[in-house]
Length: 236
Image 1 (cartoon, rainbow, N blue to C red):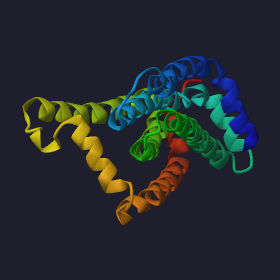
Image 2: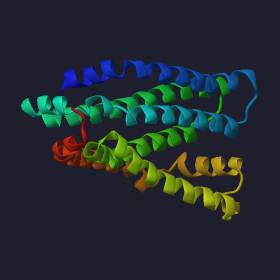
Image 3: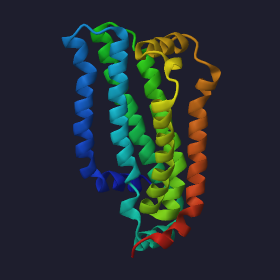
């Protein structure tokens, strides 16, 4: 299986270049603003959160494309002929995606420490948002991967885009016509997060990582069952 994970690194090495460029650009805004300007604590946290979201979106796009290289009947036949080939093939994808999310979290956390040291502000809320972003990524991968395995990258991504577009449309409609006064200003929202989660984190939040990893494992099991059926949509 380690060979399959190494294959993922080689097959996707060209895609790392734009990821590194955008990550460097977003990282610049995490560390530099506290140096050149006297930012308040909520402004530092807001900058860190938005920069983390940008990096996460780039990683998200990369994660969605790692299945295309192996969607060939010849490759599927080879994998099926090896011992536990299907499990190793699917697990390599899941582990690789989890590795990307973990590296993103480690890098952003490192930048958070730098920003906190430079600005002398508490960035706990940014760390909480970063953890939430990573968990959302894991939830998305757990949800969409079985669809991609079963229907292929093109059809699977179409199904995902329809679902996500529907959710985004609902959010936009509410943002345009709904009552947003309940959320207050951005500064008030960040301060509320700081007061709520800086000291006593609710138990339901503490259990979220375990739930996300459990769903990720369930998704892996489902994908293993669907792998052979998904070969019907592969090219020769």
